[in-house]
Length: 421
Image 1 (cartoon, rainbow, N blue to C red):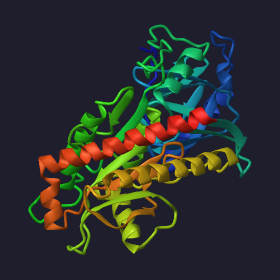
Image 2: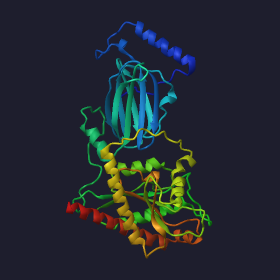
Image 3: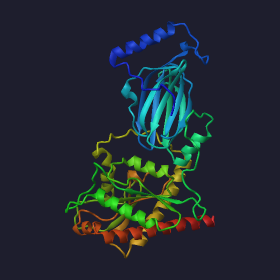
Image 4: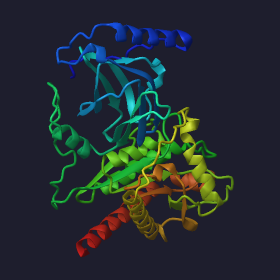
């Protein structure tokens, strides 16, 4: 626990009333004698934060705070739950309450006084995060400075490192710096981690078959069946993005894959299309350009589930388009294609596939730049025969066994290639 009085400071209202009150406070501060704080910082040195904004999703979130004068800052991390602490000099938070309404990677944001000469922001995260960039820069209009920081989703292991490696350790911190992933499996290797993503869930039912089957139920049943088959293999760790009927935003699913340092991610679906005669399984990988019209339409449909569930569209933050990330993304795409081929090789001749069964499009759920990912359409609920099979426990078990076999084969290929390097 943090022994702080940090709380979300109430805003000063809106319009001219807020502006006049902020101006009056600034005048009072300027005219008051600079009483010394306990740590030697003069109260007369108080900073005014007059504007703030937040944008992003559960993979990357940017926070911007405008100050009348250049602030200093320090950053700390706390776990149980994951939090980012930003310590500031004494600050008057003069922006409206809703300016930093929690979103993206942060589920709660508090700010306020910590004592004479000191203020603090406490950002409670939805999972492990890291500040990838933090800077203070002059505003373009010449009025004061801007504090900008980008938070990105990271792994449990990396967040534990951030907590344990910092010099600052508050009383009561539970950080131990332990590895989150058990690397002492029977082979002595880090367990091969697979994230299975049952599509849809909660308010987002997905497609609905002619007999009333809901996609969210089919995908969860298959994900659990695949997980059970994978459990028979040695040194494999399986994580499900959801284990019950709940809604998870698309970016949240990708964040879970990165949090657990997934070696691969498989998103499971059973959609519906306008042509009821089309049936069979399809495998999709990520591409900015769709392979065909049907793939493009399916990606558009899947990428709209956040909006359909009432989740506000996120403002895109500036992407890090450096050479290293671009190379990582290309390498990941190569692995994703290899995984898709392994899946199709396993399924071919055993279950029905559509023509040109490997397709590609811009699916948001496949956008982790460092996790090989694919989306498997098990069949189409718009087709009566597929709907019947998708509800058949025996067919489910057979398909789950084939997919688990494909994943195991892909893992062996990776380890073999690594030995040859």
